[in-house]
Length: 147
View 1 (cartoon, helix red, strand yellow):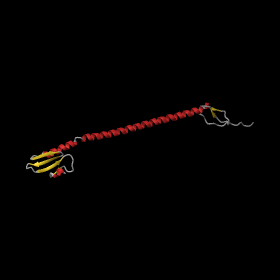
View 2 (cartoon, one colour; view 1 turned 90 degrees about the horizontal axis):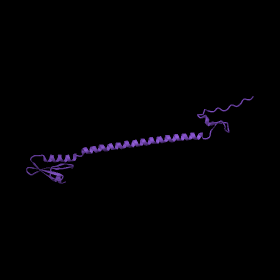
View 3 (cartoon, one colour; view 1 turned 60 degrees about the vertical axis):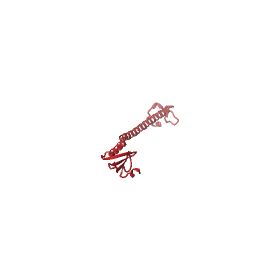
View 4 (cartoon, rainbow, N blue to C red; view 1 turned 90 degrees about the vertical axis):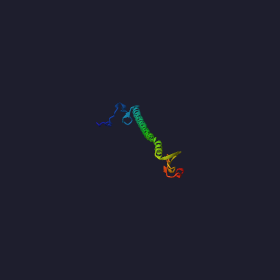
């Protein structure tokens, strides 16, 4: 008696009910619809993963945007504090210049817009002081106050 041919060895299958022994070449064929469901489940998983990754990227970008906005706000706050600290200086500078020019005994002084003239007790011009800002705040002759 001749030996019967052995059926081909097939790899183990996760879902044996999805397979059928009928086929045109003697191989295993999946039952109708099972492959579609598996592909649909894989597609749904990919869509879910991409959606979660998209949300994570969106949250990361929003967090970085908030951090950069907070950093810029902190920088503006530092500048504002520095300006607030420097605000009284110009007024104090002018008051100091006036006190220095007028605080000498035995001299007379005359003020004019932007300058102050000092004269000795004999009426002779002693010095002139430019107020606010100039290259040279003190001049030795009256012509220096004009130019």
